[in-house]
Amino acid sequence: MQNTHTKNKIIIVFGVTLFIIGLIFLSSNYLNEKRDIAYQYMNNLLLESVETVELKEEVGIMDTTSSLEETTNQEEQKSEETEEYVDPYLKYYIGTLEIPKINLSKGFTDINSKYNTVNKNIQVVETSTYPDVDKGNFIIAAHSGTSYLAYFKNLYKLQLGDMAFVNYKGKRYSYKIVDIYEQEKTGQIAIYRDVNKTTMTLVTCTKDSKTKQTIYILELVNIENI
Image 1 (tube, rainbow, N blue to C red):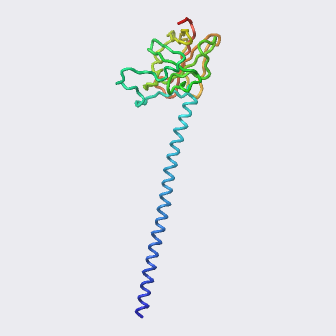
Image 2: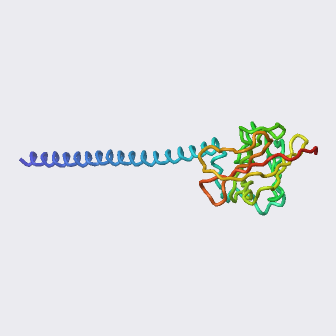
C-alpha cells in the first residue's frame, strides 16, 4: 500500500513538472512570437523611413528647378576658422557667372558633368543653351537660404536693370534684368522671354517662402573678348 502511494506521488510530481515545463515552453514560444512581431513592426517602420528619405532625395535631383528648398544645414557651413577656401570643383568649370551687385562670382560646369548639380554648385539646367548660342536661353538654378551651398541667397536683392555677366570661351557676355516674377513650385517652370533675343534665366526659391520660386529673365546687351 505504501509503495502504491509513493508511486502515485511520484507520478503526480512528474506530471506537475511536465505541466510546468509545458507552460514555460508555451510561454517562451508566445514571448518569442510577440518579440518577432514587435521586431518586424519596428523594422518596417525603419524601412518606410529610409524609403521616404530616398524618395525625397530622388525628387530633389530630378526636379532641381522646382525643389530648390532653402538650405540651412549648419554642418555643411564652411569653417570660419579656414583662412583660405579652395573650391574643390575649380578645375571642372567651363565658365563663370558674375553678379557684382550681390558680390557673386561662381563657376559652372558642363551640363553633362556629375558636378552640375545644385547640391554642389550653381546648376546649368539641362534644357539650356550656352551663352554663345544666338537667341538661346542660358538657364541657371541654385539654392537660396543660409547654407554655403546657397549661392543665390541674395538674388532677391536684384531689381530690373541690374546687370549680370557670364565669362565663357574667351568672351564676356553682359546681361540686363528685364523681368522678375514668381511661380508656385509645381515641378516645372514657365519661362516668359522674347524668343527673338538671346537671354539668361536665373531660378531659385522665393525668399521667406516654402511654396514659391522666383524667375529672373535677363537679356544679352553686349559681348566682348576677354
